[in-house]
Image (cartoon, rainbow, N blue to C red; front, side, top):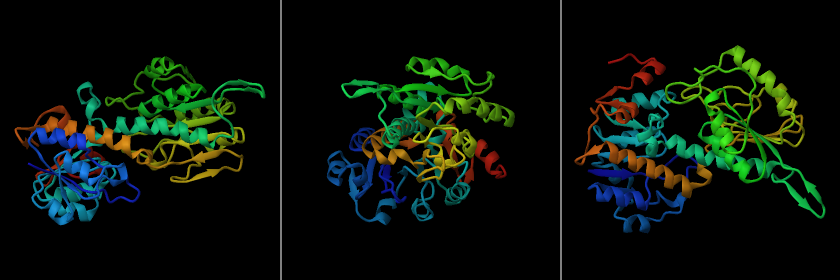
Length: 381
């Protein structure tokens, strides 16, 4: 089975969907891996390294896709790339299908069986395939480093001959994978850390990392959906949360926001009035910037200082900034998924396996994922 790994065309993308290590794994499984020349350059992987691992390096993009049976990618493919994928081939990538409506329809019309890795169900046996958790781990870590570089001081407590430096106070909003990693990283740097989430079940996880769980309002036990994500709050809950949080924000040196709801704009956690309550020199790192941001003032992709002297950072796709580890983790997730759904050299798109069903978006010229049909308001087939 011919498996192809094209070079990512998205501006600024540094990651690649395979590494020499995963090529060896796929080769041992009987898959023939073809990598587009230069695909790994952004991650520090040379064509020679891919070739030595057993991959065939292809210079011509048209030749790469010719006869392809499986295509591995990082980002949603552009229209030109979709046209190159042969009908009946399988695409494995992060497709963001609940938002990328045109792409979903294009893949269906092309006859491509598309698996979207951002739809991997959050169950124990699928953890090794969970690209969202992998990338969120890196984002949470990097967010703290970004905050520390933007702060006018340093994070740890230090007693020096020149005086005592008090530890920074950091608040992390959202205790998912990114939030917990941010908490752990801030603690390792010596900050005093608070964590907040509408899901009371994560309190123990926050406290296990040495942080204090901030209890603002009463939360209900149904604050978490079946996939393990936080549910969207009611307007009343959001308003009470914001009111209770404002007093705490005035004490913080850095706030890191991580709240995302799959397929929806990011919820607003910090209003302009709340930001104005923060002290000059404090920093907000908004990890939800690519979905509009958790802060009302966030400018996606930009860093700026508010009228009140608060630095607001809206980084986009942070994992691209650490491509070596981002590609290592992502490629392992991809290989784990591919080898999971591949049996006897073939991928069974009719499988009733929970992981396969949860990620299969299009097949046989149709959109087959009911959740996506509902969200995109596409009539069922």
